[in-house]
Image 1 (cartoon, chains in turn green, red):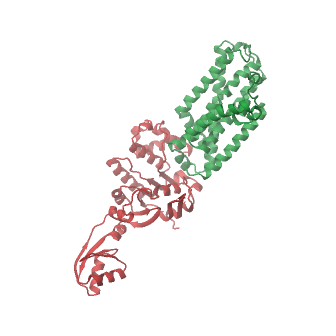
Image 2 (tube, helix red, strand yellow):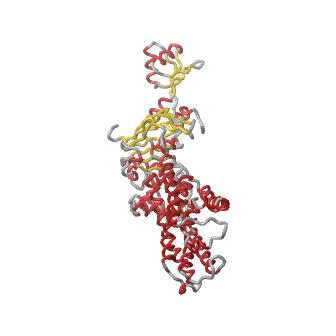
Image 3 (spheres, one colour):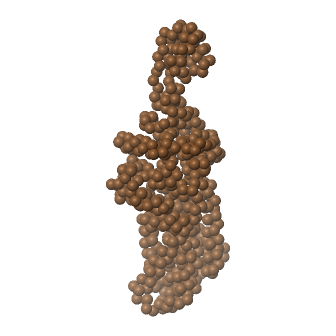
Length: 251
Length: 299
């Protein structure tokens, strides 16, 4: 199993798309972080409080879509290029193949979190706010929760990729659903919307300061513990569907 | 099942909706032999190979390798190597890296990757990205993957596709060598001349059904015809038919298939019919194939 995961990680790392996505992810985190530091519309002037630094580190989770897409690509790229056939000839158990993809994508999520932490720290340093920043319990909780949320996002991506198989359809569908459909539902049915997958995932990356900055009219995210449980439920349902379909579908 | 049978298909069937791609296909393949797998486009060759390696699930029947289904093989990479239709490459990677990733997942060394790249003549291109490879080079890389685990059984779907004449000859020699080393090889090809030079036996399928299997000599002999002129064509036709031959009468001859000229002459002599002319026509694998498949194209 370790050999399989190592090989799978190599596939992810060697992909130029993964590298490009990671760079984009860090730009999102960096620009988001700078915006958070500069703009005082929602959170007030940045004073380096624990709550504000925690909200700054929430930016890492804000780039969850990048990790999710890498998860999607880990499987759909194989279908797109037909390499899934060779993967399954080397490892005939489709459940094992899916488990390995989940594990490797989780490792990517951890690495992404680590680079994200580095990026946010760099943003603090570049902006000259590092010395003012308070790294208290809220901040450490944000940093600790980020990899958990991102691992779940990666798993969601792998599972949805296994279910849909088409790369374009999976990515386009996920983006439209996450950023358009759920947002629209949130506008009209706020209390229901926060239980939807990506609203729940947003809750995972919402420290109190981030919650406080949510404008009126937008649904308040679920509490972190509930949000993790709800999103994990969606991941499990999708993963079960993925394993079932992978086992019985022709490749 | 005899001890040296590596591959055994029993009633293998695949239906896609109303289309029966492979229908009740049964055959076996022993170690050290090369079986040519022939059929028109869409006859079910690729589907059969994909079922053998578990990429496509059979509707019924089974394909067993050393007595077990592919998915249950303890060590698939060292048991079966396959070049199967629809399996591609990670075009952005270098050839050696793609092989090394596959090798790493099953505990095979990078040195072995270099060996197989050398075997397929890609040493010089090992460090090049696959996106820049020609069809023939990709085909060679596919063969390298198949050979990675030094397997007992090779399943090769059109392995000479995209190769130049030297490449085709190289594949032929490589497969002969591998068979001589004791491997069982199932190879499909549209290059009938190549199959004739390479295979010990051939299996012809049409509409997913096996319509002929045997040595090339048997297959061509069964389709070879003999033109006969004799004193009593009607009487001779009756005798030949009763003895298992197929007879097509023309104005002054009989065209006989399924019986060699020598036996026809002896039968005519035995019943007192004078033979005026007995001419055997030569049939090669291509003629036999076209006759068996009735020149059919894609379904």
